[in-house]
Amino acid sequence: MSGLEHKPSARYRPVDWFRHNTQLAEVTRTHLDAGHGARQSAGRAVNEAAIRTAWDQHHSCTLLRDRLSEVEHWKLHLEQSVAAVDDEMAALWRAKTAAEDEREARHFDLETAQAALAQREGRLRLEVVRDDVEETLKQEVDAVSEFRAHLQQRAEQSFEQLCRLADARQALLDDIAAKQGALHVDLSSLALTTESAEIGFKPDPLRVPRDSVTVPRWEDSCREQLAAADYQLQQSRQLRAVDADTVVRGQNRLEGCHAAVQFAARRRQHELQQAHDELQWQRGQVSDELAETEHEISRVEAALRDKDPYRRLAETRLERRTERPLTERVYDPPWSALRAETTAVQETQGELRQQLSQLWETAHRLRRHLARLDDNIAGKAAALGVERACAETHGRSRPPPLVRTRSHLDKVLMLWTGYIWT
Image (cartoon, rainbow, N blue to C red; front, side, top):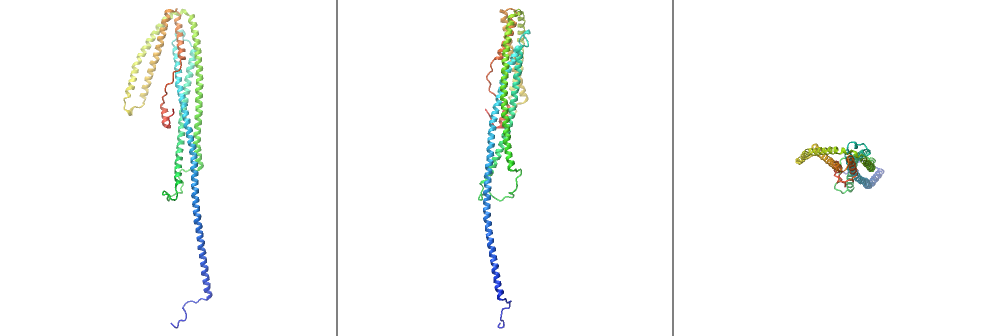
């Protein structure tokens, strides 16, 4: 070992040693600078990420609140439109009811005019003339029939408009329900925080749901809903105005026809009175007319008795069909036919009784005048009595309106819309 003077390895010069140390120091400073820069960059990234995340969340919450306000705004407009539609439906329903009540009330005028015409058919022989009374009565019948047809048409149009309003109202309610659901979803989304238990990762959160629309298209849809409802409201208001105009015009026309009939009837009575005073030599015809009247009374009485079996049969069938089981009690065609048959028989008997009453009155008047007047008084007295009876029938006051019962279509509409108006 004494022979080894140095370590068996390469020998470096001091310059190399100092250079190596200098290089290590430089590398160390480089790594330190790189580490410091990386730490500073990471810190800035963390801070920027925290700020950006916080502001993004704040921006999303702000947009959600704005969206809630916007949806609530449109929902308020839709609810106001629903209220307007409800008010208009109630007003249109009252207009429709008024038109139908007016139509039913004018049936009395039609009956009186027809009854007056039927009574005037009781005139005898030469007294059956086509005078002004008959012409004005026919004009009144035509006017009442036309007026009732117009009222029926207006009522049907009002019913159709009510159906359209109900459709528009249901569309508004559906849109309101959809917006209420959207409000519920957005409110629940806004209430979520980073500490909520319901949050979690989702498979594909960035997907666009099917049938999604843009905000302008959504706003256009809301405007279209409101525009459709407003259009139906305008149509309904115009229809109500037309209904009111129809009623007023029809009433004025009927009042004119009624006054014309009364004037013609009074003038005809005056003419008959004059003819009665001038044509007294016709007394011999009174006896024949009395015999014909008594024969007609017998025919009417026989005809009236002949209707009793048919009426009993129809009423018995109707009553017996009420014994059907509960599930079989339907408004079938036989039921409608039996009701129509019963009503027709009752109306026929009523008309026969009315005719019978008129015939008895005429016969009594003929017998009374035959005893105390000359040959020519009886015929004119009978005609004059018919004209007076016609004028009395035509001029009698309208009876009070009955309690209106709703039709089947009205009940269907009420059940459909969920509303019952009084």
